[in-house]
Length: 489
Image (cartoon, rainbow, N blue to C red; front, side, top):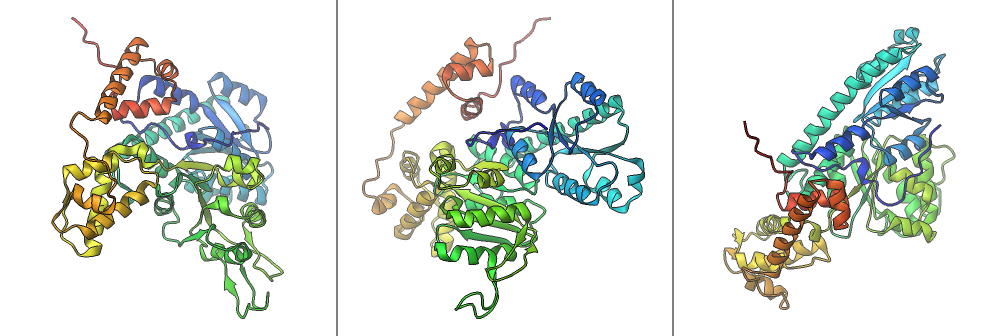
């Protein structure tokens, strides 16, 4: 079996892609290359002739036996198509496990291989109709399987392109505000992870809206009709965290006068948000890991556990890789939670959204305070654009709300902002340093791209940035792709 050994750091590539309706040629080529990876769920290898034929056709079969290996591989690779090999002879437990794994990765196009007589079973029929793009019967025909995989891959690519286009053309979505490149990436990531029913880890600085993103993932998932239960791991004393998560039976301890339902059980059928998971003590981490592996809850004082169907989303502003090295966070729990990873951008990474966010918070403040404040003046916006925002969205919201409370008129001005923060800088002049930096950055981008004949990989290396950062900068400066060359007749 192939095994993956993914790094701690960024698993965002598993869900994120450049949210552009005009995908550069080299990115499209990279996608073509990456989507030829084929996730194969099986306890056995494909027959050698079948695997050899698939490799000849450009497929790279990567095997996973169980949930743990699926979690590792989907973090390390981007799959568009999957094959599940049902056992011969039929095994009820293994079939249920395979169905659960396929159901949890519905963003993939799935093909199953099975015995012809298994099709007569009602549960297999339902599995085929509900979750598969196609199926093949043993013995597998390599040529036919390759054609079916090609069709499935094409459909998956079209779906991916539509999601990217939707992320660009529909800004201010999921209850979030912003249309900057960083936010379009976030919208795309939310759509991707909402489609699957596996754990998600949301990373980001304090005040970047991690809980809002978690709620957006829940609202866009098949569990949207179920409960959304949030637990702040940093706010619960260590001695109470176990009982908050798992509940307790009557008489479990002195003050247990009646049975208490834990938050995991309360979230049954929906989503459990574990906010600030990096603050969870090690003892509770061990209990949470056991639940994620077994999907069973045993309340304190109970002798038997019971199954609970719940999706877990965790958030943190801590560097979990460093926490693991320090012995403060379990490595195995990290891999259980970080099946998919989403990053919420800091406000300084999406400065194009400051105006829209300030207006949004002003509208909320006016409604909350009952004041007829309709807009911000240009000098007020100029002051806000110059801030570094260490507190991110929470800081911006607080400043606008406090200024609105002190505002005597119908427009929020620079003077209103300075009443709250006397040390706020003056409004920037038209020829500000920010504008000069913006102009120099655009010139450098255009010059380096031209020198490298629009080779994105080489340009990114020359500028010392990642491809994703380069695409973000190109979008920021409205440099969409290589200019068209006019041809003579």
